[in-house]
Image (tube, rainbow, N blue to C red; front, side, top):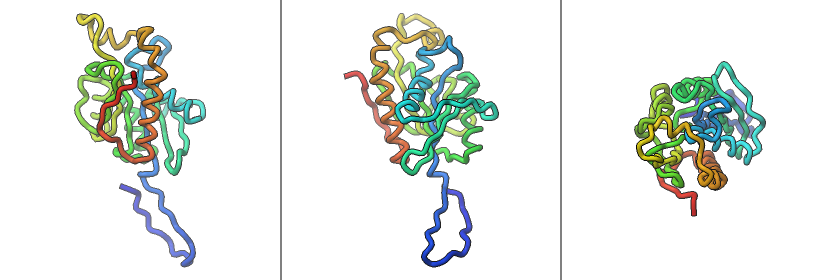
Length: 212
């Protein structure tokens, strides 16, 4: 829903435009801050948003302490795109999302969250809007803060290996050498999906494989 603005009287030949919420998109990569978490499975959301920022020529990340996130923005087409990486650590990610949405007046339908998901096999991406958090504490935090009807790119990091390993330990391990060999294809596919969301204004529910 756009911002309602009463337009002033203007000459008949003048074109007047009102900017609404649908011209801004907010894209969030979930992860944990700190060098020790780089390229761990739980930080694949950070890796993907970093790759998207590079591919689209965003300016360098700026830490916004009042919004508890790293922030960058750029206009793509007619849409102002705001990208963030929360600095709250994963379990409180929703605080940064809510604060940024409020500050920039972004509607929930224009929010896209990128995160890992253990129940999806590595090599697969699933997209949807809304739904449960599937046990992901970062997603749970976002939903608690802003509601559940935001778009999601769910990046498979499963299955656990070995099978008996604790889930919290597995997601904080770094990707294997074999998995790292597919990271370029993964991040390129995610960047393509982000652009589809930005320009189409929505995210189609589907499953994609990035390993051919």
